[in-house]
Amino acid sequence: MCLILFGIETHPDFPFILAANRDEFYTRPTRAMAFWNKRPGLLAGKDLEAGGTWMGVNRQGRFAALTNYRDFSELKSNAPSRGDLVLRILESRMAVPDVLEAIDQTAAQYNGFNLIAGQGGNVFWYSNRKRTVVRIKPGIHGVSNHLLDTPWPKIVTGKARFQSIVAKAPRDDDAMFGLLSDAIRPKDNDLPDTGVGIEWERILSPLFIRSATYGTRSSTLMRIDKAGEIQIIERTFGPDPSQDVHDRRFTLTPEPS
Image (cartoon, rainbow, N blue to C red; front, side, top):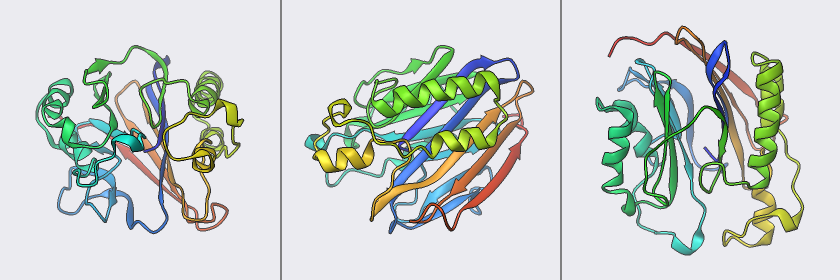
């Protein structure tokens, strides 16, 4: 993912709510969210180039999602795929904070990343740019291509609108997808400097990204209700987001570990 907005214990009916966008080059082959044939306990999209995923859930109710940390001054050309880290979390029998601690042992090999992962009401954040496993406190949070809750414009705007929707209409899919489709670009003086140049900073600045070669490929909503049932909707897009739009819906009742 390149944008994850989420609420922990922010609504009495939904202990956890998430809204996220995945941005990628249009030419990178991708399979939409589904249960994997060779890993039937895993529900996730798939990066068909590297084999990993950006977000997934397993049948025990564990979830994980990843964003890249954007800093081109520290980019490694031979780093392993970060999408494998989500699979590692979802397939591990260790508790979430323990598997994140294990990931920390080799985290320096990877280009920058953030991981959001949780199970059973406990949600954690880890970044190999911070090197600390953090249990996230209740409230509204967001992560893009920097650290958790870094006040980039898309995070500030996204969190405020997300909080309003959660408070007023947490079941309103149209409102959530409307938030994720916001393509308004902030002013130049509000943009970060991540080493990509001002034109790309502008392109990458809104919640929903559009360009000739790169943009938002999918939007995902996930709600976990009081009984632990997980509801997910994934909306996928082609290069023209007004066309070739598909929704996929999933409901999971967590199984015992």
